[in-house]
Amino acid sequence: MKNIFILAGERSADLHTSRFIKQIQNLVPDIAFWGVGGPRLQTLGFESLFPFERFSLIGFIEALSHFRFFFQVIQRIKGELTRRKPDLVILVDYPGLNIRIAKIAHNMKIPVLYYISPQVWAWKKKRIYKIKRYTDKIAVIFPFEKELYENIGADVEFVGHPIAEEITFQLSKVEFAKKYNLDKNKKWLAFIPGSRDVEIKRILPAMVKTINDLQRTKCNDFEFLISLSYTISKKQFDQIIEPVKSYAKIVSEVYEIMKYSSLVICKSGTSALEAGYIGTPMIVVYKTSLSSYFIAKFLIKIKMIAMPNIILGKKVIPELVQKDVNSKNIIRNIDTILNNKKNYQKIKNELSILHEKLEKKKVSESASLRVAKIALSMINEKENKE
Image (cartoon, rainbow, N blue to C red; front, side, top):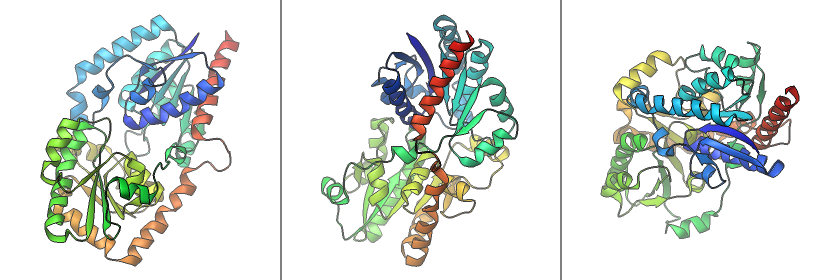
């Protein structure tokens, strides 16, 4: 039986990867999948070598503090690649570890497909040459990334962004309101603190303080909704939201909370891009350790952190970073957006452009199907060479 090694170390990667694995299984059922993956992959029969939650890190210093763990991961994967001899290695995002695994696989002459390549256009630009050297094919999700890799002679294909197929809604607005007992006459504020424990620890307290302050001053204006990710510690989450748990609604449907809320306050990253793609105005917040922040500030060459702003090439939505992530600033931006209908509509109009930029309109195939076909063609090419 053919086997494919996959490394998908984050919640979003777990979701994106589950999509193309389903596509591969529909096309060729008898392929085994193993490596590093989360609960979505494991429901598909994926064999994960390590506890998925150990990979949910953020920031440079946080990653360095887990050096011994990642050293053990690399050694274990190297041994397993030697023993199992996979027909293909697929690496999904997670550059700090995946570029090292790409080099190991390349030296073993195992074909390597990199899906959702690192943001070389933002920081550590020289990584692009390592990616070209150690991978056989790169599947990118932003159209401008294709040109970057083509300019250095890499084998690259733009497949479209996976959120174009992943964002679906199970509940109507009426059903959503009924489930969480929401008042339709109030404005719904969505707070999305992230899918990693370290994000919850750093970002959720400021969100809770914001909710608490708004409840005291404007309780008749808003419903407060907090998104709960399945990948985080429920115990830590419950401890932080204790001051607001009697009136804030804890919501598990992440896309519904984005779509039906008047405004989203979310951490930077995939959540911001998803909310932007859905078209809901938002405030993006980012907070990490002081050491990690200063290292990132030195290395990152772009002036914006929110993906919708970066893709659109201008600051459409507010960004709050580090010490600016506090109740006073969040409330000020909430008032600025919600109390100006013209500005609110302008933000919605700008965000609508994201659809055109993220979808691959020239080809009817979804990103997951395209990646599946690329993977299978690489396996067939390897067989023909042998």
